[in-house]
Image 1 (cartoon, rainbow, N blue to C red):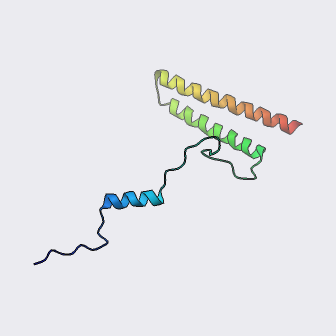
Image 2: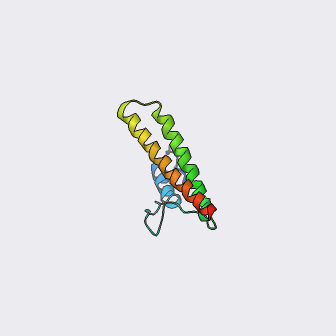
Image 3: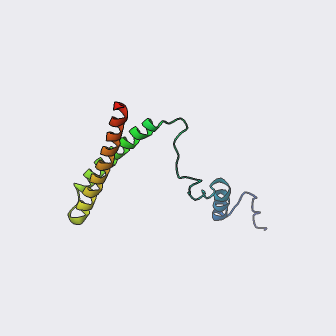
Length: 103
C-alpha cells in the first residue's frame, strides 16, 4: 500500500506564517525627522491642535491622579509630580489661548 500523497496545500504552519508576515506585515520604517510616528491631518489649525493638546493633558492628569490614589510612598509622590507637570503644561496652553483670543 502506498502512503497517501501530500496535497500541495499542506504547508509548514511556521513557514507559512513567516511568508505571510514578510509580504503582508512588513517592518514599519523607524521614526525620524522625515518619518514621524504620527502627524496631524491636513487642515488642522493651530487652535484645534492646541485645544486637543489641552484635552489630552487634562485626561493624562486625571489618569495620573487616579493612579496615584492607589499607590504609596515615592511612587505615589512621583505620580502626583507627573500630574502636577501636566497641569502646569495645560495651564500654559490655556493662558496662551486666552491671550490669543483677547488680541
